[in-house]
Length: 442
Image (tube, rainbow, N blue to C red):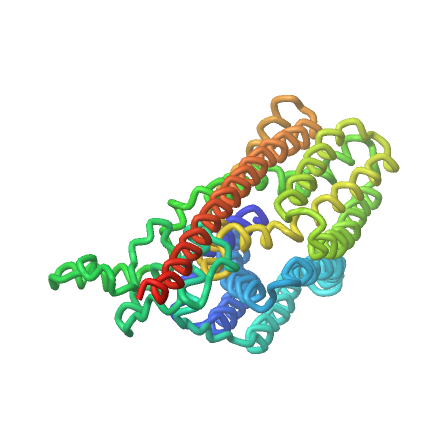
């Protein structure tokens, strides 16, 4: 059921992104909270396992996807310099609730029944609606300077290269600004706001309707992200990382039981992992905010360390050794989770963060869906839970290769940015010298 829940909320994140663009982040979060609560409450009256899968699994996961995506998107818009710390602090709530709610839910089941426990949990999830009401919506201004910055970033220029003269070259009217509003993220640069190219503006009614339809569609979801090489490379990292993310949490307790660890000691391993996970998110989010290294480099290091820890898991056989493994796994997992959303914002830019988050989570969900079954297949074939951890570790090491490729793409983009900046400076220098020679000629 947890597997279906995770897949449901990951796969519906593009829907949440589109609804947020159509309505507002606040209203989508409130609606998602209602769906979460409704799914759990209806699940309390389930008569068989299929109904539990559809309500507590699918419907609850869908509602959580509607609450998570707009919240993380707004968080990325709220903060710029301290975005890594903000994402890390926000993600720690997941650790705290998981640590507190697990024994509380078991207490409710022992005191009442599982049906009553689900009803109480459904009531608690209505607090998501309250959290949605507290979100402060941001109204983005789309002036010419902002448009020029976005186009410069997409073309590989740094924001410092933009000059006031560049902004004054283009004076778009309201129709051109509306067209650019949704196509500014296109890597193909299909929109043109300058009046220097009037032949590119659609003239026929058919072309106008087609452009209007494209404008409306892109305003809800930026499908041109699939042509962005850096985004697709980072998405492939997400797929392979998800293959290794979820398997350890599912197999740690059974693996401990197979080594003769008592039930309560095996459960304590999850608590140790959760505590170190909390610390890892806070500490490494703070480290990322110091900008000692590039965020993608820090993420690469933590993913490699996480994969290495998982590969070493089969060597642990006693409770003390498994406790050390659980702590190391939780620490590295928290270090990875705390900054991977920050890296996504740096890859695509804040102006495309909402759509990119939905697409990224959708693509990553394939890894989360396939990871546990693949790990289970190896465990059944080898009759050893340790093979599941080895599979997860290998998947994470492979995902780090895509981060290395992303780093190379970033360096290549920075090199072209420097070249374009030099050419831009030389061009301005020639024009200024030419203007200075004109009075002497007269």
